[in-house]
Image (tube, rainbow, N blue to C red):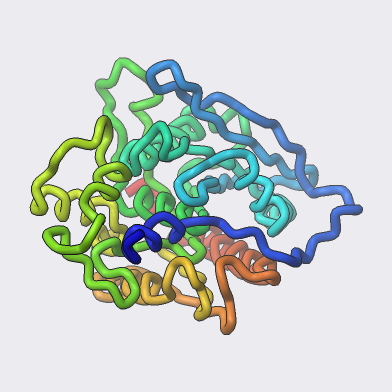
Length: 314
């Protein structure tokens, strides 16, 4: 198999760490409601889990995009549980909506991004039921989930007020994004300069990932255009929300270069952005819970700030 094919097949996996620092004996700071249907696509139910704080709520919501290798089975969600995503956010009073946007066996990347947006709209539509203020929402994700979270954060819309479906009258904007080791630029991957005219095996593989429907012959120009549309680094705008990027410098699957490119584009556009590099961090690393805590503190500072409150609905 060509080198390009190999890296594309494995680059987006959430690899379970050998050691996880979690106290499984203590009661979690949340209650969990599983497999809530937030929408359906062609008769296929789209699911999320709701993690509600058992202590005092702060009235704010987090959307967690659960996806690894662009697969969103419950095993990926259990990895988020083990790394303390819901422990840490719920201990701070956040209600977390863990969205499973579907898998690449059924959906292409643009469809999965649309599903995340549908979940955000659903939370806004039902915000009173959950007691959350959806003027200030955060989004998180790791690896493929970090890619989808970033893409959604950078390509929002305010909904259509004339839609006959109340879901699509809702905005899918978020106010802060914290992502771990996200793929960000599919046209510049590590030391490989991607050329849709020349790179062996690349066109057909990308067609299976980025185009909805059957893979049919596409021109190199059309392929490049679509690859840019699904690359967060190419979708940054001046009014993009704040971003926190966390990436290990020993990541064997998603090169650190991806977050560096993304961070550079964010700063060039004047976006509030931070990049934390974990020395020796792979994909992920055993002590990732420490960085999860940092991400929670960072999002908390953004969503509770006066600036976030004033700009949330813009």
